[in-house]
Image (cartoon, rainbow, N blue to C red; front, side, top):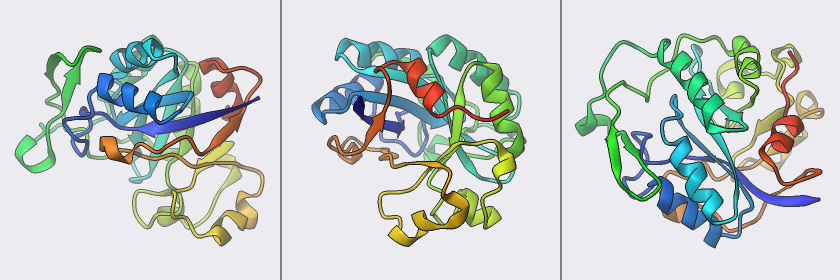
Length: 236
């Protein structure tokens, strides 16, 4: 069976995300767009995932809890988990690897923690927009420890991307999937080193009007978070 998906979405917890990207607003927009499987993946934190999953489920969506992790090499990696509890445990571990500086909301943007009814739970003070000290090759092992999976984000972009930083795809990393941006040149997807990968395209939405209508589909045996995790499973 095939299901419409978007596995790379940001909320107002990401400093570069719009304050209007509350978990409730984002979930409603995903439903209006006709999506069926969605994931919240804020920068270096899963702090809004529980609220988003509740809001998404209220619209009949299958929701995964996630994070866009920035590695030591400044490579973005989407990390996905089958439930908010395991995502929050992972997030607590990642918090130990963030740079020891506070966010400057006037310069980088607010980092709002919200409930599923648009209420503000708090403001995240840790700086989420930087890189962690976690090496890229450690990510598959880390996410698998908490029952999740991961794939490198927008690998075709010139910055914060695997190909932009490393220049090649190493199968020994352990990822079985990768994300190509919407404007990726078609010939890049034909690279020989990518031929064995499941190539995904997500919106990477930071604003409500960036949430796409249903376009990309994922072939799964059932529409569940665990089915997504298994389809994208890392090799560790």
